[in-house]
Image (cartoon, rainbow, N blue to C red):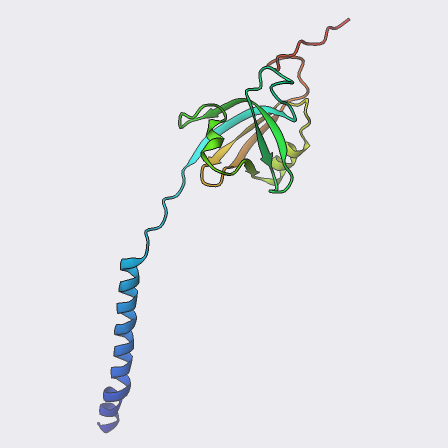
Length: 160
């Protein structure tokens, strides 16, 4: 009986005091810890345009943005159309953040197709726009062959 009494008086009491101190500190931290920031919403988006083209090149281009698929290499993208389900029209959807470059992420094959698109190819990128990071998570890509004037504002070449 003597060893249990000694254990209770010295070791067990110290363990209880440590546990109570730990709980008190944890409770105090919970009271002063800031609430986690609300997650930025993801917005379905479709952008259509041409790499390396501006409104001076094609009257149907409304504005230009800069796209990057790896964070380093940047390409100018002339926007013809932006569709967003949250009601934001045009390139205004990209001006809600301070980052001037829109980072495009997704499956390797889709990103490679975007990187390979030339200035004569109409590019349609479908995905989810992350308002917090000013990035697009690509879910689909459609790259048309060089246009014959449709939707470009250019006259088709005459066939002889």
